[in-house]
Image (cartoon, rainbow, N blue to C red; front, side):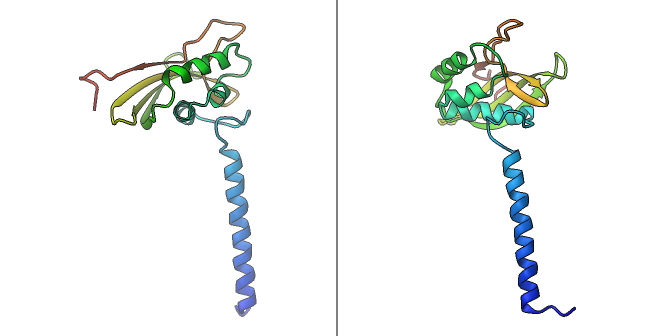
Length: 158
């Protein structure tokens, strides 16, 4: 078959359509802090946590809490009030699973808007392939402490 301008145009249009479809599917699957049921790994969850705090968005932060936890909205509002709006830039996230495969500790190393190093530890839990920030209290368990912020000690600052 000879490659005529019409055939080349059709091939280009088909390639563009497939690329657009692939990008649309990827965008739908990578959804932000909301979107119940979509897989989200520990690092993505920790970064979404920082973004919600930076934006002072208590609703987005509460959506990172496990489904069914009581008090997640109040905990999110309190965190936004005390830790929100600092303009943190995530430099690194280290994840450990000391208490089993469905619980994680994320150590977030970040830089604030003034260039100061910040280290924050966030407790995460997994429900059905999706990671959540431990906000509020599980009605069948005990209250969870989602995060603690400490300035890095001189020995650990890098």
